[in-house]
Length: 124
Image (cartoon, rainbow, N blue to C red):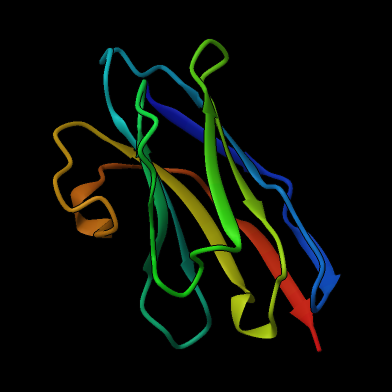
């Protein structure tokens, strides 16, 4: 059974940093894609960053390029999202997701396994 568990969210002032992590377990595929998504109240879920296991080529939404970095520890099956220079607009519930055969890596519909989410709140 696939399970994704996020942790590491929190509340920070604007300009601060957070590093949520996502522990993946039960995934039998040797290669899959990990994505980070966020959803603010009243808004659609949007892709933030993604990376394929074993790859050094991450993908980012324009809104976070230069501020967020996605990384993975393949041995531990943990993905991280380093978030720097946080803005109040980054406030949302952040989810990690995993999928096989993902083509549009920032499209939430491409993923079939999701974590429960971790809240990120940035105050002005």
